[in-house]
Amino acid sequence: MIEIGAQIPQQVFYIDRAMLKAYADASGDQNPIHQNEEFAVSVGLPNVIAHGMLTMALVGKYVTDWSGGSAAVHEFSARFIKPVIVPLGEKTDLTVMGTVAAIEGDRIKLDLVVTSAGIKVLGMAKAVVTK
Image 1 (spheres, one colour):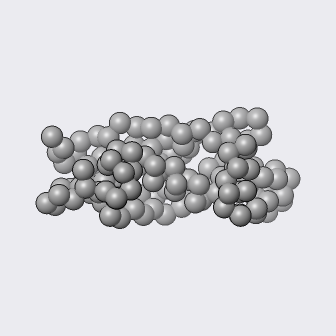
Image 2: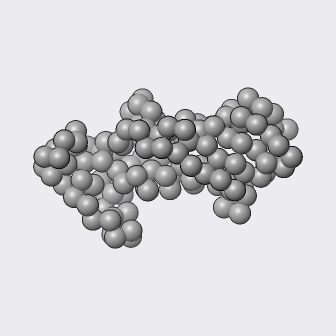
Image 3: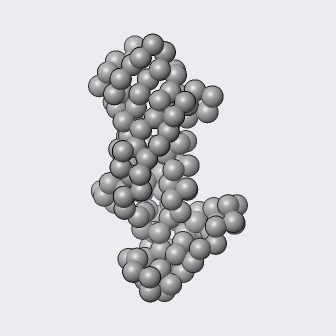
């Protein structure tokens, strides 16, 4: 039985430069901040960063996997508050955890915590699902 305050098991996704390249090719978002370290640093970033929509897609996968599929997801939103930094030759974690915040009829409200390298990267992350 699902109860308010229940913790959803965390999931860790690993992002590397190959994933960024594949996402850029699939999405058409070839912004150099996602692939070129020199350019990213020149515009004030600490390194290459993951696409925001890639980050959201991975969190969306977490929500849909837990709820049983995309048809069960009624709402999903978040604010980008910090970049997901992806150094060359490394895999960066994207760690997602959820808590049941409310239950209203057949709808379950989730509060999500999303971090990378221990830093919260999404704020106000939440979803409403049926399960």
